[in-house]
Image (cartoon, rainbow, N blue to C red):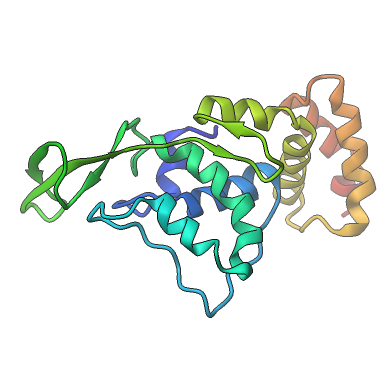
Length: 207
């Protein structure tokens, strides 16, 4: 699911990709770890379409702000891992640039007018997770995610409970969530097993 076109498209604005948007999406929808909103005094990081500065350089400067650093240590790694995919979810080895690059490409833009871009810098999809585990690409990042299957399964269970009951999962529900997690562990957290366990739980029957 992490590299489905639908996920990659909804986490881009149609023009450029952002490791921040994709990183936040992975944290919220796959891990259930919702980062705090950015401080109102800190401007958003926008990719440099001229290709003068890489998104990594821009984010590195952004992390120099202590108010941003703690969250971006968790947000940026999954976003970097997905940088090998463009705004439509297609694989790419290089960024596009409106400035000078290695090759000039002519075409037609969304407005129907002539559009020119260049083959820009190579994509770097490597990174290091907040707990210090390094990866070189999306394949290695997926393997790191799967080392904590419990976190992914717990988030899926909570998302399905919200969908099934129409109510958020509250602190008082944690024991029932833990029971469903333990019950479905023997089936390697199969989705069918999770759904059956949810509809048989008090959260669904009595909430």
